[in-house]
Every structure is written in C-alpha cells, then in structure tokens.
Image 1 (cartoon, helix red, strand yellow):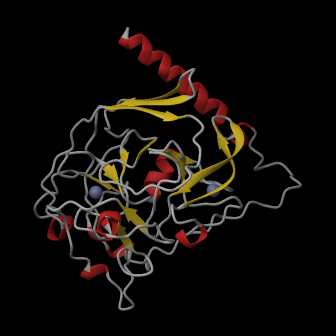
Image 2 (image 1 turned 135 degrees about the vertical axis):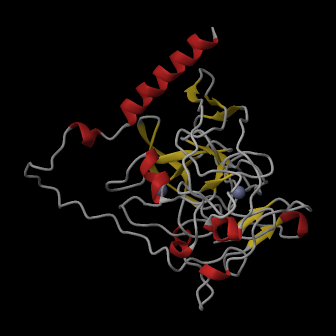
Image 3 (image 1 turned 90 degrees about the vertical axis):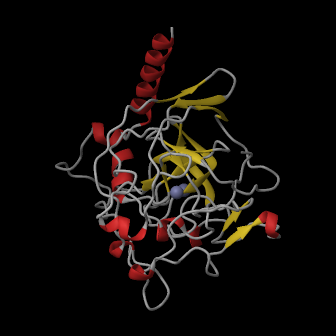
Length: 315
Ligand SMILES: [Zn+2]
Ligand SMILES: [Zn+2]
C-alpha cells in the first residue's frame, strides 16, 4: 500500500511539475523572430560585500529577550539556545568596511549521496502534505567536516547527516495572519530538494551563512544531524530550477505554507532584503499550483536575513 501511495504521489508531483513548468521551454523561440524585446541577461549578484547579520541595521532580534516586534532587514527569533555551538571566526573573509565576502569563504568539499525521499501532494481538504526523510536529492559536502580541509580550519563541525521524518500538513493557499510570528530554531521550511531551510542565525546568535562552513548548495548539518540550508547558492538555485528571466521559480515552502522563491523579482530584477517587508516577503501575482494567484510569498536573497525575517502567516 505504502508503495502504491508513494508511486501515485510521485505521478501527481510529476504532473504538477509538468503543468507548472515553464511553457517557454516547450516552444523555444531562440531562432525565431519575436516582437518581444530580447531577454536581458539576469543581473548577477555582487557576493563580495554582504552585510553581517547581527550588526545594525541587519539585526538579530530575540523576542524572549525583549524584542517585541520584527523589523525591516532583520531576523526576529523567538529565543536562542543557552548551549549554542558553531563557528565564530569570519576574519579571513571580512572586508575593511565590515561587510563579508562570500567568494573568499571556504566551502565544505565532497559529494556525499543520499537515499532521498520527498513527496508533495494536495489533499481534498485544502492542505499541502509534505512527507519525506529530509535527505536532499543532490550530493552534499562530507560531514563531519574533514580534518585537513580548508573548511576544517574554521569550523570543526563534528556532526553527521541522518534521516528525519517529515510529515507536515500546510495550508495549500495560506492567509496572512493578523500579526507576524517569531522564528524558532530548527526547520523554518522545506526546500523542493527535500531538505530543511533554516533561518539566518546560528545557535551562537550570529549570521550562520557568514560564519559557518557550508557546502556548494549552501547547506550543512548540526547537532540534530539534520541537513539544512542557510544560503541560496547558484548551485542550489540551478539544481531546483535554472533561472532564465522574470520572477524566480519556487524553491520551497515555509512552515506557514507560503512559498519561498529565488532572488529575482517580478521584472527579473535582483532583489535584496531592502525590497521586501520585515518578514522578507511581498505580495504580487505568482505561479501557484499551476495558476497565477496574487499571494504573499518570501524571497531567498543573498543578503541577511536571506530567507525569513518572521512568519507572515501562521506557522
Ligand atoms: Zn545551520
Ligand atoms: Zn515576488
């Protein structure tokens, strides 16, 4: 039975992918004359000068330490663990002006492969059901971080990657809540790759992407042995859906059910956190389950807080 259910889920998912996939790819127009202006090459990001989260105005706010509201450009955490762990030395890729340079930061090397399971289906009661084992559908860096590698010099992450049951029911068409909610540690959402999306802070309360050693997909593991992303690398974006023009494709779902998209906005412009609200999203028509719908959604940008500042819906 389980197999039958899985198979039908996969078929449904494939069908959804086919109907929501880029129609343009079915009708290549490269060699044909067209009345549309020529597609512009997508704007490429400058990854050499990124703001550190935790330094104003890109703040890490902590609700249970008195920060009662989310704020623009900031991450609003519910709390912070007393026994935080992680890497805290970003000196070798910090610029004189206090920003950090992604291109100078080592990566966790290697190609660990995984027995990935992940399904997304819509039920008849208005829910989106996510099931899986949190192992991604792409290779990961080798964890624990290996002694002698460049990454190990900065981050001796001793944790392995293991399976975690995902069995989530999210609203298929979420609604904006009367007030936003703070973000907790652990998964804040799930990528279409099947692995968790974490918010932008480490358990030390610093900018995780700026300090911790991640692999080329922007992910790593933690004390719970869960593989998760902090940074929307080009490899991660290309793996999910290569960007050609216009609005970025869906990259995953956050725990309130709203989607998270890549870093390009409605007109194909490269977004930064300054273009988004305090929860790191905005509202305009998007492709949602095969239809254009005016709906709130998050964007994953290259600058802090990267993916979510607070929940705009109900997590
Ligand atoms: Zn992490
Ligand atoms: Zn958008």
